[in-house]
Length: 410
Length: 74
Image (cartoon, rainbow over all chains, first blue to last red; front, side, top):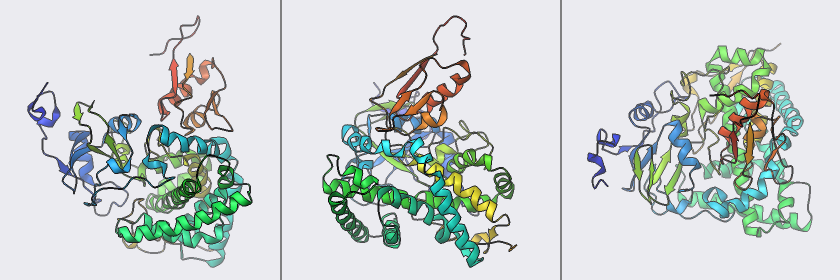
């Protein structure tokens, strides 16, 4: 037993005893790269002490291997009320509202996940390919008839996943502006607690009405299917809000930011445009390279020894998926976008029991949408200087707010 | 090669069916892993091992069985 672990020679912590603060500034001119300090911290110590704004001293996990281990380890909890928030002192975090199973552990989480995972299988999502192709073509038609410049986020990146999640759940797509607005507020780190509460309440109210309608008159969709489960109206509405939010704002940002990344790497864009067979691998690499949903948090339920460190019960670990996906121990030349590489094993969808439920839908959407866009507009380019593209710096999901693009007319 | 499933752990992420579709599938109703081939041919071994490693819930165990004629892989 070491009474003072910081003086123990077996712990690397001896060399870097001071907790660090979380780097959040991306390098100037490199909007696709994580903060440069993260790479340095990972190289020194893939798991190290981190100071949280509320005074808590927790941990920062940056190495691919240790991030994966912690995400899969049931001794770490995803319960919101056990976590310390890394960006501001927000006081006590309330537990997840009913239906938001991202913030639950073990059997409580499994109860929801088991009801849903049969609806998001590889086969079922691939069966949606034709529908994604059809709707993508409609979006591209609208872009073409409008003519450049157009905002790719509004005309392409948001509608495709928005429509798909609405159709899956059985939510009227006509309400998309309503959801888009509230989801944006929910994911905005600059929004006040009150603003977020209002957005959440508006979505819950809408979903509760919809759930009652589905109970009375079931239709062929996920929400109707779930009315036969043991979920209460409140839980089912919460699931609906959670899936809508997840469906609206994740793939949308991958499509927007991914297109910008391709436009910034013309050789990679050309490779994908000229060989649509590259699409599935390209999607994995874009996921790895951009890692838009980051970071995540876990709380140790008991004392855990891992990667040469001792994490105590109650300590929060911040898991940097961005840093893990740029770990040179896992990926060769990690800072290079290379659509031909095998990016399999990235943690952009997370890892462990909470790994993204909708990942197979996201894969299908992206594997269809990126090549279709490049095939339709082979001369696609930015309509504004790259420096003027507005980034979502304060959002839970990284991306671009707008992406003005144009192309040569035939 | 021997493959053991721990279906109670499965979270239906689909990494197995995506990575080694000749060996694993997902149940259409509950989304959990299904083994298509208990003794996959050597051509499927690499994909099956990769799928086991990628499984987010450690629901797949792959062991190299000592079968006559099977090549031992490091």
